[in-house]
Length: 137
Image (cartoon, rainbow, N blue to C red; front, side, top):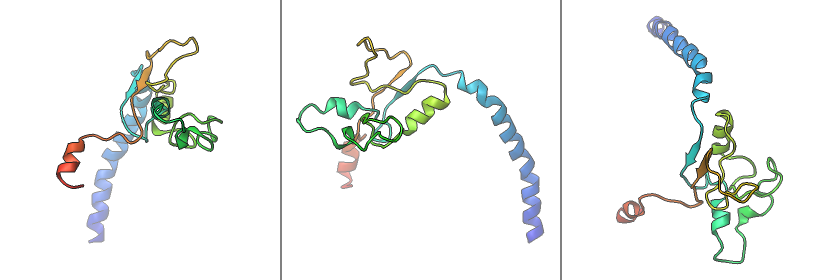
C-alpha cells in the first residue's frame, strides 16, 4: 500500500515542479501588465472611504484615531488596520502606488487623479442584502 502511494507521488511530482518553474518564470511578465487597480469591497480593502464619508456625526470613527495606522503609516489613514491592507500588498507587488479612496482621494494639487486606480470599498459594505434577509440570516 505504501509503495503505490509513493509511486503516485513520484509520478505527479514532476508535472507539479514543471508548473511551479513555469509560474516562476512568467511572474515578472505579469507584473508589468497592470497599470491600475479598481477595488470594491468592505473593511478588508477600505483605504479611507468610510472616514471621508462619515460626516453625519461630529464624532470620528474609531479607525480614524490612533492606534490605527501607527505601525506602517505612523498616523491614522482610515484603514481598519494598524498597518497595510491586502489591497496595499497587491498594489506594491504589481509595482503600483497605494490605491487612494474614492472619497477624499485627492492628490497634492487638490485634483482627483485616478489614473493608477481608485478604491470604492466601504467598511460594512454588503452585497445582496435582500438575499440574506429573505433567508433569515
